[in-house]
Length: 335
Image (tube, rainbow, N blue to C red):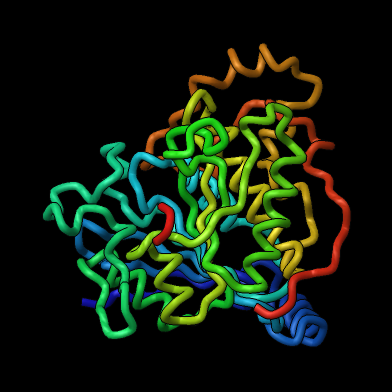
C-alpha cells in the first residue's frame, strides 16, 4: 500500500496559465515568474496510510527558496481539537522561504469520536503520543505512529511542532500541562520556547492563564523521540480547554506558530494569524456580542473545512504585536 501518493501540486501552474491567459501571454508570464523567483512554489497533498481507517492528509508548501523545513502535527489526541483547527488554517499561510509540512488530523477516528485515544486500538497502543521510539533501536508501535515516524525520517525537518491541549491551566493545576510549551532541550528550542511564551503571554491578561515553558516531553512522545533520535528541534504546544472556546485556543496555537516562523524568516504577514472572516467580525464588535454570535461555531464538525471556521473577538489586534528580536538560527517528561 502506498503511504506517499501525491494528490495535487498547486503553485505557479503552467498548464492553468496556458488555459486561462492564452498561449503567448501565459508563456510570457511563466518566463517572467521563473526568471524572478528562480523556481516555482509548490503545494502538494498526499495521504498517510491511504485506504486504512487511519488515512489522513499531509499538506506540503515548498516555497522553492532555501530555508528551514518545519513539520506541524495536530490532532494526535482526539479530544484536543484546537491543534487540528489551527493546523488546517496554518497550512494556507503565505511563506517567504523554506518548506512547511502539515498533518492537521493525525488521529482522525479519535477526533470524530472526541476521544483522546486511538479508537479500538489495543490498550498498550491506544495513546498515540506514547507509541514513538524510546530508544534508537526501537521501532514505532502501531500504524499511525509508524506513518508519522516514516514521514519524519524521510523529510528530516529542522523543526517539529506538535499541537495539543491540556485540561486545566498549568499555573492553576500543576497536574495539567495546559498553557505550556514543552520542549526537547537544546539551545535553539530553549530560545524559541521563550519567544513563543513571550508572544502569547502578551495577549493574556489573567495571570493564572499565562503560558510557561517546560521540559522535556514524556517518553514515547513524538517530540521527544524526534529530538532524541533524529536530532530535530521539537516542541509540544499546549493550550487549555477549561472555560475557553475552541476559537480562542486555536488562535493561541496560531500566534505561537507564527512567532517561530517569523523568527525563522519564513513569514512576514501578521494578518495571517486570523482568517479574514474573523478579522472582519472582530472589527468594532463588543466582546459580549461576539460571544453570543459565534459560540455556536465553537465545535465545528471534524469533516468540515476547518480553515473556514472563525473565532470570536476575545483578543485585540494590537495585542499580537511584539518587539522585533534577532531571528533564530539553524534549525521523565511531560505530555
